Length: 205
Image (cartoon, rainbow, N blue to C red):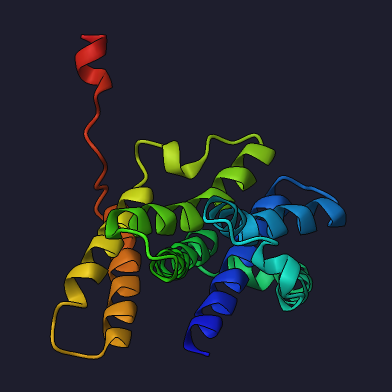
């Protein structure tokens, strides 16, 4: 039940972020739903295909399509209120990657994969819905932008999870702690302008 709740919350967060991007691009209602849908389930779909968990989750559990549809309707109706919130898209996207990274890691553990593979699965789950969203909206995916700490935050959260589970407390605390580390890492990176090293300075010079 705990993991299902996290999955639903992540789906809602990514679905809303997809709606906001689609509405910024002035897409029609069908386009808004498609962008919201691929943002919410794109990474999880790729993850399930990679580990052979087919049919993929949203095909077996119609509740995800229902949740996405409700999130789309809610976001379209209250889009003005959502846009009044500071950095709304960024916030929902950040919450989404935190939740989905850990879901991907949990799926990897269930498939008896090595920790490094679990972290890779978590990063794919968190990031590739956004990659598909940005490509469909003719944008450079956030994961590839030098100024954005995105996949790096997912990897840091994944590593921290495997460190935290070694400590003598309930694994659920490690799970939640890793999610918070991902979210806080990205928030701090944006607030203080932290980015990966710029390799182009050496090339251009």
